Amino acid sequence: MARTGRLPRRRDAKNRVLRRGESLRADGKYQFKYYVNGKPKFVYSWRLEPTDKLPQGKKPCLSLRELEKQIGYDLDNQLDPTGKNLTVIELVDRYLATKTGVKPSTKMNYNFVRNILLNEPFGEKKIGMVKTSDAKLFLIKLQEDGRRYSTVKTVRGVLRPAFQMAVDDDVLIKNPFGFELAGVVVNDTVTREAITKDQMRKFLKFVRDDNVYCKYYEAFYILFHTGMRISEFCGLTIKDIDLENNIVTIDHQLLRTSKMEYIIQSTKTNAGTRKLPITEDVAYCFRAIIEDRPTPKVEKFVDGYSGFLYLDKDGMPEVAMHWQHRFNHAVQRYNDIYRVQMPNITPHVCRHTYCSNMAKAGMNPKTLQYLMGHSDIGVTMNTYTHLGLEDAKDEMIRMEELNAAKRELEKTTGEKPVTQKMFRVV
Image 1: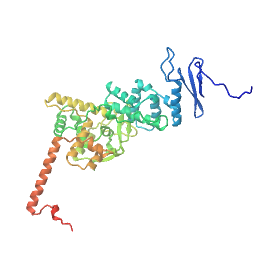
Image 2: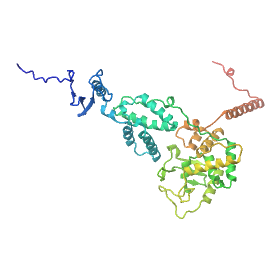
Image 3: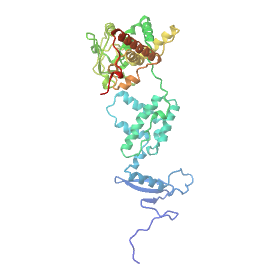
């Protein structure tokens, strides 16, 4: 009898025909072999079909045919099925490897997020198994564990582009973090409110007259009347201050890293680099600071900059933390003395207050945007101007007085306002 040349069909213990690429290992586990870019890949299962019973003592798993279907779908859509085996933390590491040239503060945020993922089971989850509901539940868990909204937002700010990179690399079809955060977790962020003009005057008077904090009065006054970021103020050097023309040049900021390293960075945004005009009062404060500044034996340099306005006991320039503590202690001292309590004041509250005061005074929004160093006018108008009911009432009264003055002027001159009835269609 002539042979046909065909190989005998392979079968399993139940006499079921095994398809191409399928095989049965000696330990009883089914195996499927496939190729990606010419390289062999394998998947395994204790069951061939979904209806097969799982051997006793074995962990639940998809059947081999179900795994094949997944792989076939991935290959048909030109996806890389092996990339789905990356864990979330491995994907984040891959994404962060592409973020070169970022500022140290940004790198610190990246490391902060990475450390959170290292301590969460979600970090070990295979990215191919992460659904949108899994992503939402993870962020909800973070908030339930006591993480602030800003922290949850920061974590999502890394995971969302990382998973988008996997989509762009044809590993995933959909980004599970592509949803709006507002509808998932509660925004418990406390808005930094500006203080009123009366509160600002009372606080500055207290600082000026206090025997402990009077030496910082000029700095407090400058922060309230320029709106500078505290890192910009800390980075100022003597040569940045032009007291002849009353202009302060802001083109860098001073920071101290978690490793206690002093660094000079460019301003927060490109718009942050600016020439800041100052009033005579502010110029007087700068002059007093420069005159009272002790001359160190050795002037310390930070990335080529020297001549910083305030130095600590070691001759190093003071940073934001120093001023944060001073404001906190000054407010606490004020509240220990006076019955009417002063709200929390920080260097950033000074910035808010300056912006709000300028907006209330009627400053042009674009001018205010420039002075604040904002790249987006929306930040100036929505985030930093705190106008309330009393401000609205004052504005309505001002408009009514203006209209009344116009009516009196019309009576005096005899001019009548132009109305639509004075025009005739021809």
